[in-house]
Length: 140
Ligand code: ZN
Image (cartoon, rainbow, N blue to C red):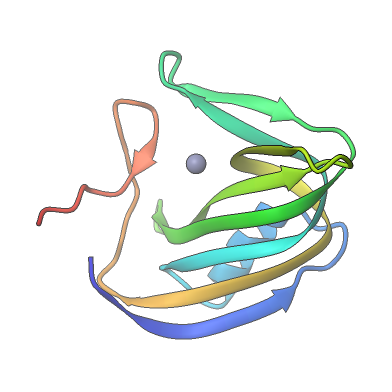
């Protein structure tokens, strides 16, 4: 899929907000239908997921306490007619040990977020047999 660059957003999320929810609401409010997301900061009590292919669902890893949001990377596309952020994170503990996975939720202590809008044809997530919602595969 080919896109051109649209608007760029760089902002700090208010403390106490749920990060994923805030990114989705920000995208909806600013009408960002397709884009890239990245962030750094600090999260409290984050929940991350590992997709269990056999059981077709996410195993939830609940982390307690405060973690460095070492890296957040993801994208925004359309699911059920609305912008939807798919986000993965690397989270560091007090020893610098990393946990990683699919972000389910996390309370913001600090979050500095970049969203780069992409303009072009709609890119939509569709339910798959695997239980995931994915884009059509590209044909080259
Ligand atoms: Zn994921």
